Length: 226
Image (cartoon, rainbow, N blue to C red; front, top):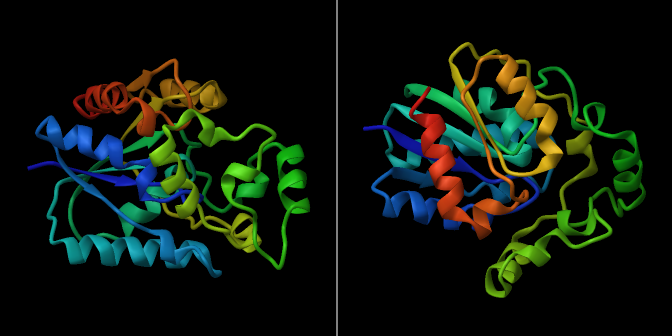
C-alpha cells in the first residue's frame, strides 16, 4: 500500500501540515506526518535533518512504496531524504517549494534583498522565527488556535543553515509539483517544462493548514499521475 510521507518546512513545525495529514487520512490515504523540529537547532543542519528523517521512518515501521511530500524549505531536500531510506520511494512531490539545487546553499538561490534582510536580523547566530522575516505576519491567515501552535513551534534556526551547501544527491525517479502561492510561479513553470504533473491552487503558502481539502485533492491528483 502506498504511504504519503509529509515533511514540514524546517522553519515551521508539524502542526503546519497536520490539517493536510488529517484530511488525507479521512480520505483513506495512508499518511505519515514527520516531526523534524529538534534536528534544526544546531549545525550541520542538513546532516541532522536527513539522519532524523531516516530514523523517524525506521521507527515508524512504515514500509514502501512511499511518496515523499516536502513543503517549502523541505522540498529541495527531498532527493536527500529519499536517498537515506532503504525502502522503496515511488515519487517526490514538491509542495509550494523550490526545486532541488544540489551543491548550492539557500542564500545562493533566493533574492539577495531577502538574504540581507534576514542576515541583519540574526542574533547570537540564530535567525528569528520565520513569521518575523516579513513586514506582514504570514500566520495571520491561519485560525487563531492553530496559529499560536504554529508560532510556538517555529524554531530559531542557525544562520549557518542558510549558508550550508545542500547535499549533492541525484534523483531520477518520478516527481510532481503542487503550487499554492504566486511566489512559486517559477518553480511550478520549471516543473511543467520538465514534464512533471503539476497542480496549481490560487491560494497562499500555508494553505495546507487553512485549506486542507483543496490541497489534499491537488496532491492526490499529482500522485495519481506519478
